[in-house]
Length: 335
Ligand code: NAP
Ligand code: ZN
Image (cartoon, rainbow, N blue to C red):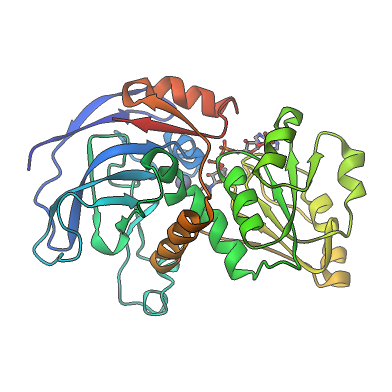
């Protein structure tokens, strides 16, 4: 196989520069994909700046990938060349542990991430194990589908597994890439949705996406007014906040679920959890079965990312805009 051209950070926080690497022989269960689009997830920014201590340089980010199958290993039969496919955060798992056997491969201790210790989707091609390569329904266009592969599944999975339904009152904290898709999926599940945002100018769009209510979290009184009103709050914000206020916004037995990664430890008071049997939890991406289901639901119910497209070569410009919370609502790189 020929070398793969991508865009890599060579040190923590550095600008991305053109980079080539040799992918070696294609594994028997691997698929090589020619990339058309790759979304910019905020996790890429965390990895570029090594916020989580997991990054190795040079490092090609990117894990919201859409493209076409270019080559397959000898043991891959279901993905013919030319099939339009997607790859998300996870590109392999052990396939044998308790969690893989239960269809919860996203909890596998041996899980491999598409752009940790391997090179990701800000590139012309990428590889993944065939179990983590998903055909894309015809109804989804590639630019709008790319963000579903990480952002979309990350919000779909907890809404689905926590049983959100027409009786549910759901809050979504942070209306960015993940948050704007969470509003749409919560509406598909029939919930009453409240958007919590630091950006008052997002109110109209949040309502168009399906939010019934909008809370500007910079107004502390507005936050206190929703006390005791929500069953499930999904936090997608990547910044620290006063989390106790969100626990107090829950009804008895309600759940505050983190998918966004704040930089500081989450501090909450025990008493509201004890008195109202409220819980605080988290959720990582979703299993391959859940990703297939989410793509089907998105295609049938018209859930799509609102995107701003950038040529792959303008990646640094796009990353700066994401960092400044200027993108509405997902930046997508196109080859
Ligand atoms: P994003 O597009 O940048 O959106 C994050 C949103 O957080 C912003 O749009 C903003 O919404 C809000 N925010 C920003 N600064 C804030 C502040 N100072 N206080 C409160 N809210 C603030 O990011 P994303 O791609 O959606 O990713 C969000 C987080 O999820 C990241 O931490 C990412 O690493 C994580 N993530 C986790 C998983 C997982 O499996 N759990 C998967 C993917 C991503 P408003 O303008 O509405 O306030
Ligand atoms: Zn992501």
